[in-house]
Amino acid sequence: MLWMTLRPSADVEAVASVDTHSTSAVEADPIAGAALHEPRHDEPQPEPGLPADDELAALSAMKAKVLCGTEFKGTLPHVAQVGHLLQTMFGVGDIGGAHGRYDGDHGAGRALDVMTSNTVLGNTIAEFVLANKARFGVTYVIWQQRYNDGSGWSYMEDRGSPTQNHYDHVHISFQSSGAANIAC
Image 1 (cartoon, rainbow, N blue to C red):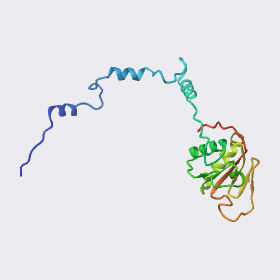
Image 2: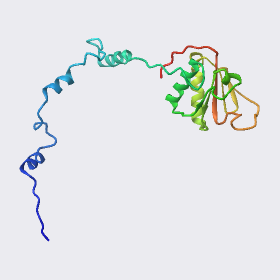
Image 3: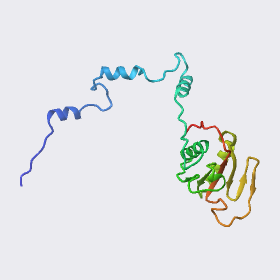
Image 4: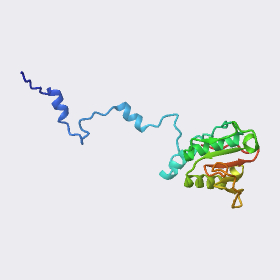
């Protein structure tokens, strides 16, 4: 059997001997360096002379707000926007709207069912919606056999099943009209 010894070329040895913590072996690219220091013409620029915190705030204020979509499972536009916002904020993938429902607020496109059996998540969603009741145009919330129209929780009669008693979803009903300007 023949054994061969492979030796790296002189070029490979030269590259391997470079100190990785030093920048002396790196040649600066003048074009890339200029691009790092000069703002692009299409980027928003803060007012000159602002302190760093104010500069960041000014840049944030200049960013365009992205409105939530106004179509969501047959609901009205303002209801759809809240549905999209809840999906974005809380990561809930299963939210029911009007499709397949022909009665009451669901049939009119004025209700959402945010499906969750997680008590902490459901409480958080219900409290968030109630805290934004006027902004979202919410009339009432049902969660875990309790009803809240903004004046506190009250218990409901037993409707017979976990779904009918709202233990597996937060039900949110809305006014028939509302502002459709919620940013996601």
